[in-house]
Image 1: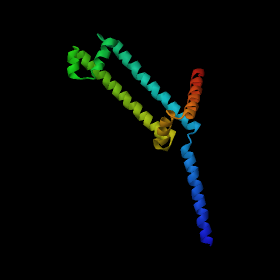
Image 2: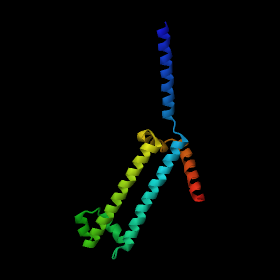
Image 3: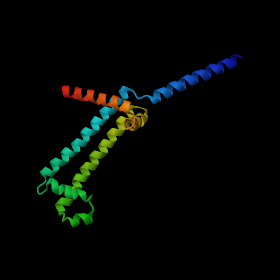
Image 4: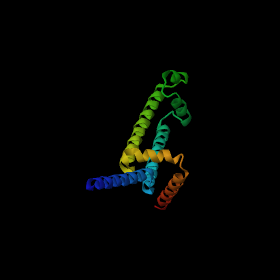
Length: 159
């Protein structure tokens, strides 16, 4: 009898713990949303930095304009297409240089995103994925997220 009551008590405890874990798993906290929002700010800033650097490279390159760069970039490095638009050797080298810079920085963004998503947001990236997926369909979560983003923007503007 004593063993049966111990088993029943154990089963109740396990059930209660399982229910608590499920409830925690289902709920996204404001702190997790804040960390997600901060990560998104970092990624956005890093992407803007790529654009700023690219524009500076175009401006500094003799014989290169933004319009010409867009033409070159539209070829995606395809030799046949570059030949069709009459790309010069220096333009091809410049395109290779800018592609290298963009690829290196894009990889850096991925590394930062992955590190923060797995270590700071929590649960080895599962919470990050959960938030990302839920923001497109859960209007209540999106409203909470937008409020957090607004507070972060306000704090940034005040500093």
